[in-house]
Image (cartoon, rainbow, N blue to C red; front, side, top):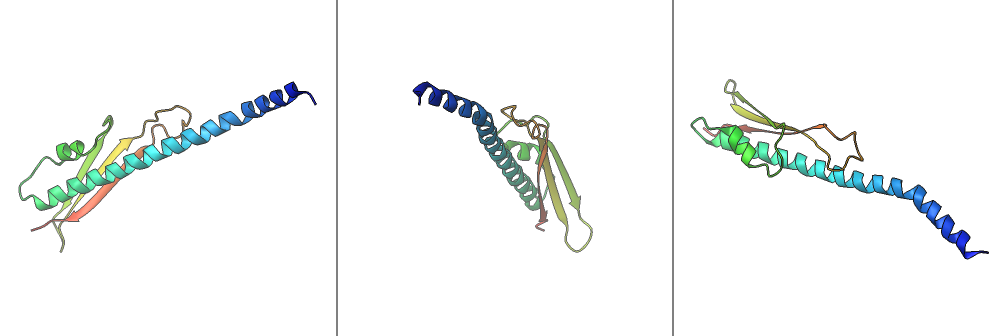
Length: 124
């Protein structure tokens, strides 16, 4: 058996498998980033809801929630809903952000809306 034939076969196998392997690796990377961003949005919404629930005077929740997010905030939307009627007055903060991929190998994730929300009782 000729040694050159084995090297050529290994090169062909690498050429077939490498794109699939890279797709899997970058998919794991982008999915991990999406999970991190979603977790950060949930934490920011919880911090904003907690601040709104314990502060007696009206405050700027949007600026506080925005300061809790350490990455690009392009397209960030913050919605605050208060219900003071009923037996338990509540404040609900919802934070949404479109996901932008770093690598363009996973186009189905690009532009997907990630969100986080939190609801808390007013502390009277």
